Picture 1 (tube, rainbow, N blue to C red):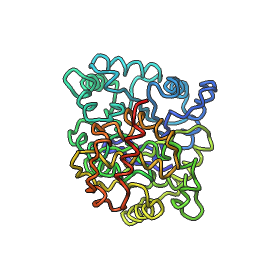
Picture 2: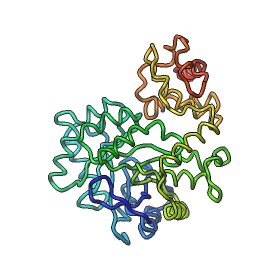
Picture 3: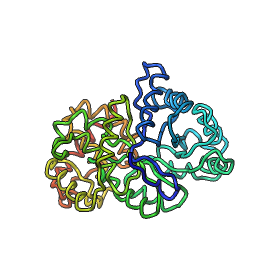
Length: 370
């Protein structure tokens, strides 16, 4: 296993991390805890969980494993500013997580699931969550306060410019990295630790390996290529993988052993390869942002990519869009696609020459409430 420093914290973390939201909860927690032991024995030392994961069983599984880990490890968990909107609630949440994990101190605690700027504002307001976490830090209950963001890159930049956190957890993978690239660059320039979640696109890449065969180099699978991207990206410290089997752990560790750092030439080639092989997807270049109705077109086109890449039906897109408005790439989209006036400015600016106007019309239709 390879290791790198998490930002400027001095902590040497494994380039592969264990994400605790893929357990088979039909199994006893002792059986699932064996996965953490196997990962730790294989060199993984960064373990990330959260309240609510796996039917609210994940922290308990981690706690079972932490009783008898074979080696040194770092523990990370989370709390959302919406759930813990006062300093006292935040402190209570930290203590509950510590109890469930069987620990006296957390190495990393995330202000969890920042999806809009007002979520950040809620976290850092006077008497709010961040204030409670600072108290926990003073009391020795937390080493490092970090954040978890599902926002586009430009919003990540805004948050990190405040210098309130020491690291950030971002949903970054080989398919969507242009969407959050600005955030990655800003984090590393300022010395933040960076952890990449969803490196396999929420399982989409393993499920559609034929469609993504162009990602792989000779002798590797698309899944291995996706792991190699997050492990070899110089702007990412930890690739956080949700493991369900020991074989999954072994695959990630094998990739980590052989992965080399990706330089700018290889990253540029990857962007070009995505464009060439998925020439109907939006690459989030952002040239269409100058919309006279202020429609956040890049975000809408990111969701539309699921139609193009995975052949989702109208019904599947309709079912998924409300979840995207609440949790996904559309969460900060206050101006809806039906506001489009078909002026054509976005299509003129689009480097992919995409039929944006028609796609916005499709999205408007899928977003209609039943």
